Amino acid sequence: MKQKIIVIGGPTGSGKTALALQVAKEFNGELINADSRQIYKYLDIGTNKEVKTVRRSARSEQSERRGSPLKLSNLSTYNINNIPIHLLSFLEPDERFDVYSYQKLASEKIIDIHSRGKLPILVGGTGLYIDSILKGYEFEITEEFDHSLDSLSIDELQLQLDYEALENLNNSDKNNPRRLIRLIQKQNSNNKTKPVLDISKYEVIFLYPEFSWDELKEKIRNRVSQMLSDGLIKEVKDVLDLGYKEDSIALQGIGYREVLEFLDGKIGVVEMEGDIALSHIQYAKRQKTWFEGKGRNYKLIKVNKDNVIQTLKEKIL
Image (cartoon, rainbow, N blue to C red; front, side, top):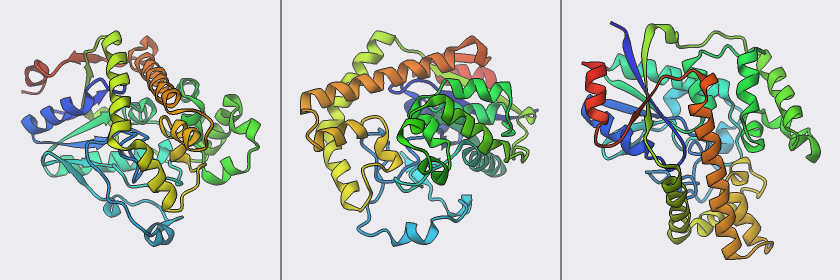
C-alpha cells in the first residue's frame, strides 16, 4: 500500500488551516506550509499566520546565514494547538526563495514525517509550490512549467527570481511578466536535479474547502478590518525599525505595499483598507482559478469541517 500525502489547497480565507488541524489531530499528522507569504519572519498579521514569530532587535543571525544554503535541520518547527507546522517563518523579509528550494525542503520534510510514522499534510494557497510537489518539477523549460508561470502575478513571478537577477533589472523589466518569465525559465533550466520525492510512490489525497464566493469575499473584507485592528500598521513599522527597506521583497506583497503607501502619505486609511481588501479578493480569485482549472488535472475532494474526517476515513482506512 502506498504511503499517503494529504494536500489541502485553496483560496485565502477558505479555511484551509482549520481543516488541516482537524485532519492532523485525527490522523496523527504534521503540517507543511505551502504559502509563499508565510515563509517570512516578522510578517504575521498581514499573512494571517496562526502562530506569531519572535521579533529581534538585531539582525546578526541572518547576516551570518545569508548566502548559505537552507538546510531542513536548521529550520524551526512551530506548533498550532500542539500540531507541528514546518517551513513557516524561516526567511528574512529581504531574502528571496524559489520554487526549486521549496520543492527540495518540502520533499525532505514529507520523507522525514513518514519516517516517524506520521501523516504529512501540505497546506497553503501557493499553487506553484503544491504543483512542484505533485508533478515532480525537474526545473527545465517545459510547456507545463511555462503554463504554470503564466498564472502568476508580478509579485509571485519576482519571488521566483534570484536576488541578484532581479536587482540587475530596470523598473520596466521588473514589472514585465514576459521578461520575468524568460528569466525564470533561464534560471531554472540550470537546475536539472531530479526531485527529491518520487511522487509516483505516494497516494495523494487533495482536499479542497467548500465555500461560497460571495461569502468568501465578505470574509476577506472582515479579515482585513481585523488585521488593521490587530496592528498591521505597527507590524510594518516594526519591520522597518529592524532595518529592512521598503523595497524588501516581503514588504512588496499584498497588504504590506498598501500600508507603505499609507505611511508614505500617498493614500488615506480608508483607501488603504479598501485597497488591501481588493488585492486579497483578486488574489483569492486567481487562486480559485488555479486550483479549479481543468487543465491543472487536480482530483479535488471538496470538504468542510463537518465531513472532512469521515471523508478521509473512507479514503485512508
